[in-house]
Length: 398
Picture 1 (cartoon, one colour):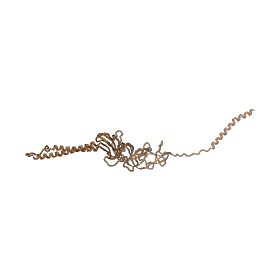
Picture 2 (cartoon, helix red, strand yellow):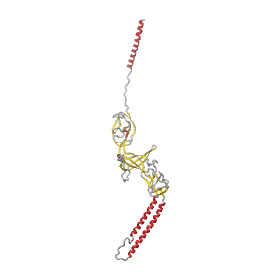
Picture 3 (cartoon, helix red, strand yellow):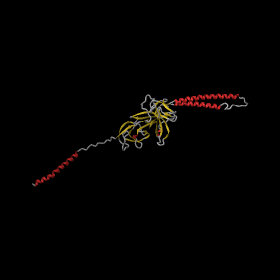
Picture 4 (tube, helix red, strand yellow):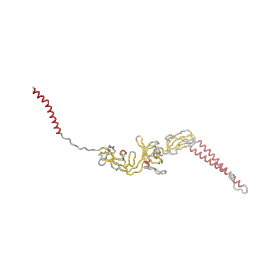
């Protein structure tokens, strides 16, 4: 019985040990029989970047500015005589248009017609008075000649009534001047448009009594609009400005504005410079002129939108011819005036460039770039020469 129990105890620890040895042997066999994985060389596809093809071509400088359209001519219409407004044009309303010579207003002319009749009568009396004095002077001379006196000499001015004759001539001239003034005042009772224009504001209406010098309306010309724009001094050297008294036109301009998501354009020219620098902004001012802003003279206009007074506009001024240039976007310029290029091996090249001119979102490059090269637009962290790239071309830079 004891022998049987001893055998059972022996199996209790031998059997687990045997199972463990078999498992270890099996694991070692599996490990040794497993094939090592094949080693594959990894290919670097390169960093994905966006590029554009730059083009070298003849370019002109351009200067961008902004301003507000205003009439080139604007006057205050004032009364030159006193009286009551007896007639007003139906178009005499704010915004009303007039051609040169159109009648705007009329002041009651009856008093001035009567003044003409009175001065005509005064002129007739002055003529009669002069004729009478001329006759009296002639009679005095004949009478003096009939007097028999030894060594009587020449007759004096009083004898010949010369002072009275001079006074009569002066009276005639004064009467004629009064008649001319009365006729002029009668003409002034009718007020006409001095040039093609538009009524910006009116201050009187029918039946109102006005005095000489009283403002009647503000009248703005419609033949030309003008835009006064401030520019940095450096920009003036790039554009053509006509000299004073010259008939030569200045640089051409494109005037534009955005209305309801659509951009409208007008043609303009640089008219003049103000010849001074603003003490606060240190900017120079030039005037841009736009002919026929209301399109009255254009039979086939690009659009019907007028360049109205007070409209805020963008202006692109055509500058000097710069020769062969490469234009790149400002976003492609890197710190230190360098650009990134993708070379023929699709590797990063860092190259310095020379910027001739900066124009809004564009840079004009005269040295450092050639046509056909691939300019990188993507920002790269830790950019270094030779970095492997995967360029994605977005087209040609215009």
